[in-house]
Length: 258
Ligand code: BGC
Image (cartoon, rainbow, N blue to C red; front, side, top):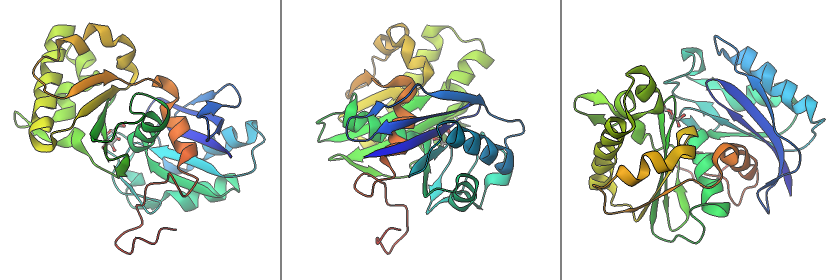
């Protein structure tokens, strides 16, 4: 089973065809800068360009850095507010001429990690948290995703957690590794108090330098490991979401899916 995976981020939009049974990319991934402002039409145009560049015809899975319910983007903390309430699935289906599935970026990355990366065979409560422009989360219980958790936005010391503990916060406030790790540790302790995960997988670009900060997260009971798939987790998870077995059900109370 092959699908095209496209991962929409604040700085780049990446894509590659994926063998969803192995999690392997079938071609080198391509990356195009995210248009600014990141309005729906220009972003859909990039999605179209990626689809065309792989000469792709078939299912396309697409991530978005916000809540996605039943193909509709509901929040856009770090994207243009024009996305709020947009039927992104319809927009991308029209742009690509292919059947599409749209889901939250970290839900996608988490699905890929659970199947092919750091969460393989984990049966307990697993929380994936990514640190980038924002903080994203994906929660799994016995391998099943609870879609659209937004634990990057819990309040810590009166502020949205991603304002203190994202990678962007580290850069913006020029925080040392030890100071930033303190913020991350405090944030993850709050999450741990609420969810008691058995395993926390930390991802995002900054997990490539995990040795600089993960050993400093000493206040946690949960096992904590860096993500294994790094850059490709979103693409692989997006592609996986196109097959009904692995797709998160965000279709609402009926539970019938679409
Ligand atoms: C968004 C999440 C997203 C995360 C990582 C947050 O600001 O609210 O939906 O998963 O950033 O991109």
